[in-house]
Amino acid sequence: MRGWPSGKKRRKAWPAYLPCAFPPAGGEASNRGKVMHDAVVVGAGPGGSMAARTLAQAGFDVQIVDKKRVVGEPIQCAEGMSQHAFDLNGLETDPSWILTRIKGAICVPPNGHRFYITRDPGYAIDRARFDRWLAQEAVDRGARLAVNTRIQEVRRRDDGWVRRQRGRAPGQGPRSG
Image (cartoon, rainbow, N blue to C red; front, side):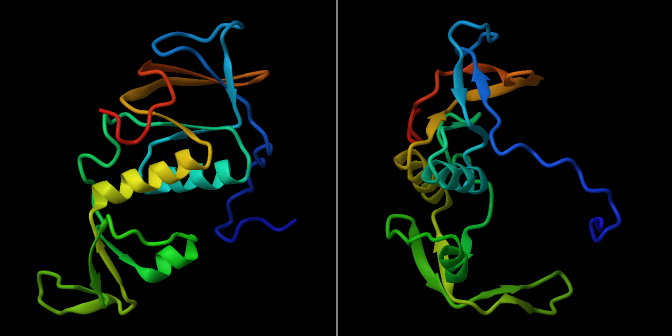
């Protein structure tokens, strides 16, 4: 078997199903009261919400955990997105978070020599609304969301993974405050 192109050894593949045990908020898991999930996604930003959306749509039991009280706040970055990014990820645009259409993106570094990042059409978006919309897309497909929750520890056990958290109980939507 050939190795990775970078010359690194190939790591052992993850099993297709890793159950995760969830204790009640603020506590340690015991054999009683465990809630099992197929996947736990830490962070409800665009990457986490897309992962949760995809897994939930495929029928997996998914829990999203985010440390923020309200998904999308404070705004992190990247208010510009190409139409290609939406097409590639199977996302329909929503007028509630589109600010304006754009014809590409130009970078102007300190030396003043402009260059195109992309000439693809796209959108300037309201990032906070977009993040909440995308998290809601995951929830609408069956994922559960716990906001204002921090993961304190994740440990491997024989029967899966156990996490210790501090925060609210799972199941709140992206607009909870």
